[in-house]
Image (cartoon, rainbow, N blue to C red):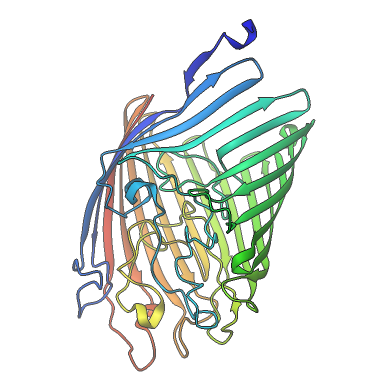
Length: 447
């Protein structure tokens, strides 16, 4: 018994984040107000206190948790922080044709079908417990049981890693075991995307996963392969996800690649099929100790308007951003023609249906002051409507930050988006578009 009485409570990476966001001409139209009924402009703020307590029971056994407390009104669906009582923030836009008259492509992120990996935790008001899991470390590996965070690769399917200004989290209710064999780690998981109710007559989404990961610190090399089988018997879901990634650093140059392919039956009705593909590549070069440049190239498959029974659209994890506005805010007011709409809630859009290019540079004046210049553009592999166009447009962002203290930082980002002919809709509509611009200011206190 004495071994189980020496508890230790400690805190990990807690922080308080305040953000204020303003966006002008979110509908991209010079003729009509945004179709969410609020006009062309959006102004909102969010606040979040995130705490990460851990309880050490023995040297091998611990319980880890994470909870958020919000000042943001619970009815504000702007992001995970404001979702009503912990429910998922979903994008209600249609992305291309529906399958067999169903609404399968609707709500790609966080939908009940499980195509988004983020999970819900029913909370009391604005106090939400996001993760809580037991961890046992043996001589051979690690056993985890409970609602736990998920991270993988560059972050196009599961988040790449917790960052303070991420708007979403990837979590599953899992029994997971990771076997450690030197530089090689092998893992097995059985997961539920969300278990909010118990229904003995109906099962929800099940994930059967396995992975292999190799890390060689001496060569700065990481390689990983993740396989997921998703099953939901009552909705005809039988999907296989194949996810491979690698990163390599050579002196001042670093490169990374992640590819995800999905095949099988996406469900809703019997007879539908899936063929989704996502690809991300990242390159970074350090010119000096204070200047580095980066290049991101990627692909996410589009919905195919000619194939009504095949799910082809691939959506990146919502935390993977290439710009402040494009693929990050709901833009456009001609949703019936393009599948993009200003009615979508802020920060619920994601990279989908695009070839994209993102490049930029970071400059750190000293330990307190830094700046970033960012450019992004994208083309759709297929038009969203018959005869439609493919150019999403171009965006330039400028960011500056200042650290008052080692743990207190203020950051300001401004963005200007020039929409392409993608947003003009059908050739007969040929809508006239206007640029969109905006900014976000934040204060981050870590402790």
